[in-house]
Amino acid sequence: MYTTVFTKALSLLLFLFVSFLSASYSQSPDVKKLDSLFDVLQTRHLATGSVAVSINGKPVYQKAIGFITLGSNRKAVPDINTKYRIGSVSKMFTAVMILQLMEEGKLSLDQSLSTFYPQLPNAGKITIKDMLYHRSGLHNYTVDTNFPDWMDKPKTQEELLKIIADKGADFEPGAKADYCNSNFLLLSYIIEKIAKGSYAAILEKKIISRIGLTHTYFGKPIDYNRNESSSYKYSNGAWTTEKETNVNIHSGAGAIVSTPGDLTVFIHALFNGRLINKTSLTNMTTMIDGYGMGIFPYDFDATKGYGHNGRIEEFYSAVRYYPESKMAVCYITNGILYPRVDILDGVLKICFNKQYTIPFSSAHTLQNTNADKYTGTYSGNLPFKVTCKKENNKLTIEAAGRSMNIEPINANYFMNVPNGSFFEFNTNKGELQIKETDNIYILRKE
Image 1 (cartoon, rainbow, N blue to C red):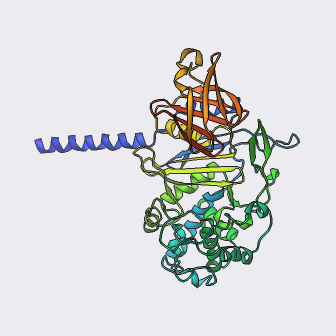
Image 2 (cartoon, one colour):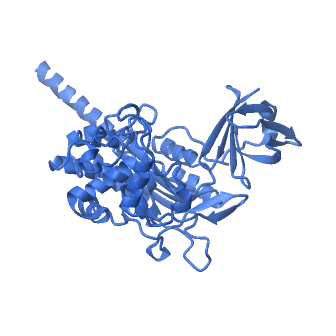
Image 3 (cartoon, rainbow, N blue to C red):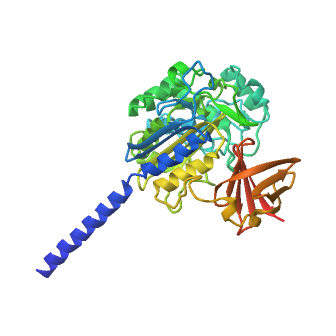
């Protein structure tokens, strides 16, 4: 009798425990707080882009802010289906298709590059695995090749192969990991050779149609009539349109167009057996020197996470997946003013119910804080020193012969919008972190 009662009690406890875990894993983020974050960024014209959050494959939050185009004769305001170039997030799609071909027995990790392109440096020693892990030693075709001069021009595969071949090898295959677009450009060409078709058609068949992505495809010249956004650079207090890349030169290294909503569908499908099997997923997420196969580790505190970042022109994308909670998060911007790393950090803290203060929501002003703790001269990884001064209850930053006032965002965080500069002080460490576009500089107080 006692055994029966004990067994029932234990079963009840286990049921409650599992129910608690399920509830905590499926808990939706604070939508009002997410709205508050993006509303203040919209109101102050500090960000442009789109965000999506899903749990267990179902969307729980989507929002778009900013603009698609600066032209008054076209649709200016984005919606959740506005499409953006996703840059190197395309590499995740390429890695998935390579692993699919392996599952079909058409390719293997130890197969050498020389099978396909024997004319390339060290082709006989470079394997498919090396390329997936960015360990090939091949030179990056977008670096030291006058890339900005020809990024908008068409290039044939033969021309791009010659650019890679002519630059030689940077290091011996397998010696280390070094991020290189050439690896995934070549992998996309290999996919075309084996699957006998264009990358765009194979992408449609093996991924897009398979999991029902409705706003994802191989890129074309940007067309506002397809609800596609251009990208913009912020400088000297104004936005200017960025030169458009001919995406064919990137293929599987960075040519895909998508939305945050579609990317959350994609990464959830990837981790839940709809695109590759468990063995392939284990291979893909096994890290060597911080690199997976077309994927990177992005843990949040103690929660294990995976994903990829992308940049093309002034589009910046970030997609994350947290298997424990089955939560996917994606943020894409078509132009940076407010630091994108801070936006993504805010979204994740809200989604994980961590302490987070909405920018400009606190009563933090210079009048009610000890601004003297920020003043002083800072130096570090910049070719000049930065001096912070207090004058008439205002803080000013002096650097490289220019002076600017900075206004508070939150405690220890300030900005100067016309210059697109953001300043975060860590008074305990005596540090000043300067954020400008995608650059972060850390300086120490002298």
